[in-house]
Structure formats: structure tokens, C-alpha cells
Length: 264
Image (cartoon, rainbow, N blue to C red; front, side):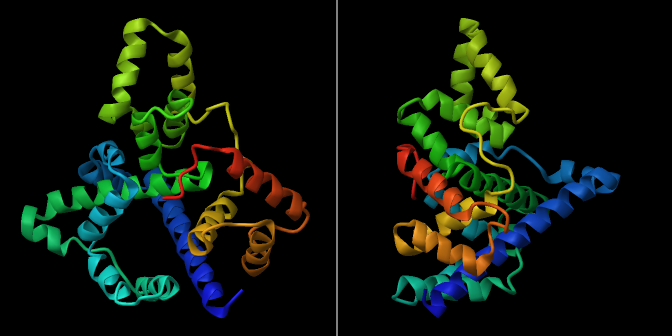
């Protein structure tokens, strides 16, 4: 593994850990600080319709909304893919989200509501990537195009972000099940809403591992047991005491058999 690839993987992993720490602090604040909950209620609105965008379209809009477009423009000046990723990660070290550009268009409160919606959608898209090897944007697209067992994908998405049920495309299915009194589908949906989707369960604690495999795949174009093992040695994603080789082979086998997995 080249030093540049090591640097990029470490940078992605650091961003991942930082986002998880931010998530933990966010929910702790909501649980312990009434003012934080009041502030959240002021700025949180519906974000599920953003899932109807392709993930590339979503990221492009998020970049504009969050002021990251200038970061991407500088990174895009490089010709080599690894150099583009390296430049992006270097710039993101000191980057802070801003609503300055939006506020000139819609006012402070609306700008903050818009940015909050995009942040929430990004959070759950990344969580879905770690859980299901594809984003919720990808899942909604797969439901739209009716891939194999597409209705099951609805339950997968809802188990990650219950607000998916308010997405117009997904709500159409729920309305149909309601009118049909389809207790089987509605029963699965109720379990998914509280995070108890029963099919294709994933081992708790391996989200970072699965997420970083997706990052490695984006860099290399493919992944092997050898390349994943090398990355694990660098980042220590699977702790000692686990059968690392078996865990890697099992996960890569599952990925290869999941025809619905998106590499977008």
C-alpha cells in the first residue's frame, strides 16, 4: 500500500470517527439539555424527500448548501483521483459548515433549516452505507426501478431512518398496504420503524469496518481479502480476539452475492 493511499484511508477514517463523536454528543445533548431539544425542534424539518435524489445529486446539492463547493473546486484541479481525494481531505481538516451563502438567499432561520435537513439526510445515508453497503438514496432508487425484492428494501431503509416513511415514493407503498389491509407488510414496517428489521442482520460494532471497505473499494475499484487485511492492519478496525480472516471473507462474500449493492 502506497503512502498516499495510507494517508487517504487514515483521513477518511478520521472523518468517520469525528462524525460518530459528533453524533454521540448530539444525542447526549438532546437527552440532557431541554434547550438543545427546543433548538432542534426549531430547525428540524422534513428531509426524507432528499432521498429521491441520486446520491451524486444529493452530494452536489449538499456541497452547495454547506459551502463545500469551493473545497471541491480546488480538489478538482488535480488530474489524478488519489490527488483529488488527498486534496479534499486536507482541506476538510479545518473546514466548518456555514450558512452564509444560503442566508443571502433565504434568511437565517430558513438557511439553518435547510442545512439541518441536508445534515440529517447525509448522516443516515452514511449510516446506511455502513449497514447495508449502499445509501438510502440508492435504496429509494432501487425501489423506484423495482429491483429484486424491492419491497424488502423499504424495510431496510426504514430500519435505518424511520422518517423514510414520509418520502413520497415510499409513502405510496405504505398507503397501498394500508388500503389492502396487508398485515404482513405493515407488521414488517412496524418492526422496521423501531429498528428491528429481521432479515440480513449485521454484527453490531462492525460499522466502521464495513464503511471503510466501501471507501477502499472507491479507491481501488475492487476489494480483496488481502487488501482489506492490509487496511485493517493500518487502521485496526477489527480488534484482537476475533477471527479477522474469517470475518473479512464472510463480509466480502456477502457483498459479492448482494446484487442490490450499489457502488455509486
